[in-house]
Structures are given as C-alpha cells and as structure tokens.
Image (tube, rainbow, N blue to C red; front, side, top):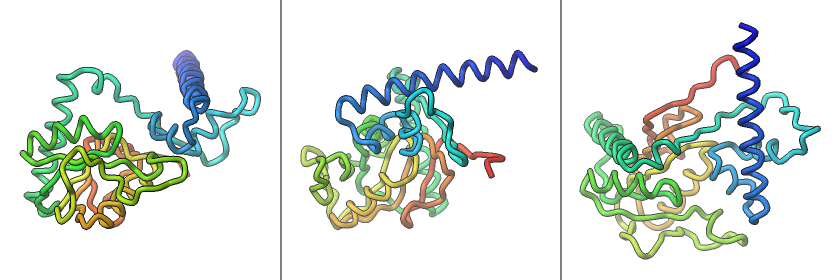
Length: 218
C-alpha cells in the first residue's frame, strides 16, 4: 500500500512539473490565463496554481481539477474518426429521445472542437460552421458572433455545437450567446468530456462521451 501511495505521489509530481512547464511556455508566448486553461484542459484557477513558484505551490484549499489528456485519440486519425462517429451516434440518440431538436448546421468550437465537428457533420450529413470564442478573437475583446466566414453560415439555423472538453463551461456559454446574437438557435452541445457532469449550459442540453464526476471533494 505504501509503495502504491508513493508511486501515485511520484506520478502526481511528474504531471505537475509537466503541466507547469507547458503553462509557463504558453504564458511566455502571450497566452492569457483563460487561453492557457483551454489549451491544457484545466480550470483557470488551476493555471494560476501551475504558474506559482515551486516553493509556494501548496494547492489552495478547496481547489480540485482534472487534467484531460486526449492526445492518444487526437493524434490517431482512426481513433479520432471513431470518436467523431460516437458523438454523432449520441446526437442521434438524443434526437430520438427528444432531448435534442433536429439540427441544420454543426458548429465546431475553435480550436480543438473543429476536427470533431467535421466528423460529426460528415456523419450527420450537415453543413459545418466554425466559431471562435470571443476571448480568442483579440486582446481587446471584439467581434460579436466571431463566426468564421470561410465555413457555412449559422444565421436562421438550428445549431449543434461540438467541442472537446467542458471545463468551467464559460467558453460554451459564450458560444451559445454568440450564436443567439447571430440569429441561430443552439439545440444541443456534444463534447468528449464534461468535467462538471452538466445537463445543460445556458438552457442548451449537453451530451458527452465521458462525465468526470468528483467524489468526496466536500
């Protein structure tokens, strides 16, 4: 048991150093805390902790998080394709159970939601749009809607949103609001992982392949 606990601590320390180094590199490139959180699939509070100096890296009381690493899927075309098809099947099931309405366009959230959205759109035979969250448009915060013009339009269409990981939910909340401002109606959200096991985000139903449910954190 002691050996197992020691190994777990060693792995935890190794992962901390890896994530901390990645966070520092992104910070040096000018990424904001929120952008780093999106890149690492962690919460913004976790990024602040990772950026602390080594001698003050005591984790704040009440702070817990999950680091989601789906690179084994994302780096393998066959695995990525299967993941996209599984999300499409979840969308079909949600449509049959009337949890989702019929979509007219699949919207991928930049950056990591785009390949998944492409596969879902192909499987569901829907046009694909791409949305850039407001926080990623520029440092001043601009461009209401932030819909990429080189892809399908969203105006007047029912939209199915696709992203990789839900952390705090703020990014997807922005996406939902931006689509509504663009006269689109979001009818569902698909993700690989939801770290909060939500049922809805801003009134839009959420379906996911994996729900990360914390136990015994109170």
